[in-house]
Image (cartoon, rainbow, N blue to C red; front, side, top):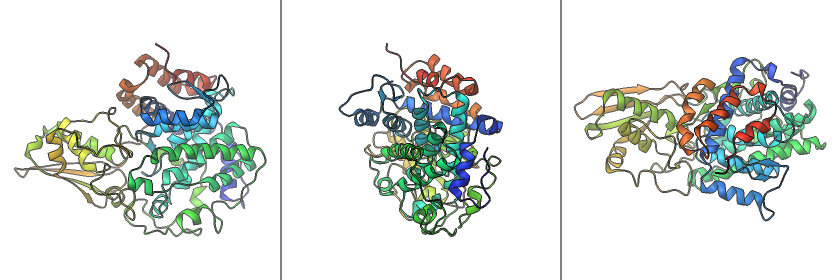
Length: 479
């Protein structure tokens, strides 16, 4: 790793760290986590190949010229070729469209922009697995460090945090794969600040544009790196400057979080600015990234599993349930932010997921897409017992951490059954991801044997001679 000068700016320190990062610098747990994140993104994306928005994205990417005969990069599943940034756009839609991608600090989804951009930049350029591993680690770490303290404030300022931070990982990964030096990488990060965006109104309205925000962020990050490679420079204090990223999107360059910050989320009302670059290479923020295996918000994942667990353990008869209380923090009960919540009856309501999981003793990882706009109201076509139980479930604001709900099922006879999560349940390592992804296999565009070959390739990523071989496995074979 490259050391930055003691008086360097945040972007310069991040640029020095990421430009010199190699696979040997990664602790075992970090390398293992990156593999888990890569596997999750690819499997979720491949399982979403039949979504209508994926076909739409491909039409937009290919335009009137049709697919490329050679060069560029391939779209997952279909194998059609397009210009690299356009292929990244389509693959980002694939990963993001069903809301089963990864999550950091609940409100950002690094993988849906990072993995597609990194693969698109790597394909056809003789990039091996070790280089891919380092590029992904660098991209995730920058995303997570920049997002760590300010996600709540940016969201309460009306920005959709996932798209906002989604530009940085692709910029860093592309810079790393293009061999940009520390100074050039710092400029790529600064240029990415200029392209950061993401409006929250789409989340409140439940409109389809949510699906396409991160894909455009992936393209913008790749563009930032390409411009930096051509000598375009960015402001040195792009993050901490008087009107830099922190001021523009969190309201303060000095550290005070603004924007009606409230509720338990990060445990602080200030940005720890020095922590953004402290202990680079020793403390890995990316380890806190969680996975979503069910189509829905991140905070419904533990609700589903707790309710399924209670249903199995106590053989709960839904007809005998008096009430179910789901205690969650303020951000989860008033998603996407306490300042700009969605309607209590909309499709993010935890009650439906809780009811279905409790009755069925589980919840399918494939099937109907539930996460974004343009869909029927949740539960409208469900059996009467699901609809009835949904009306007896309440989400209650409580002093609970991220992804740490407590579920209490009160029966008609006064008996109560309780289960709670501690927030770590979905921060999977590779072994756990490996054990969970077969739930997606039935929706893949190829057979289980090919899926297992993808798992094997990622498990042994350091031995992969070319990223192209991994992309080969992610393409459906005719017939």
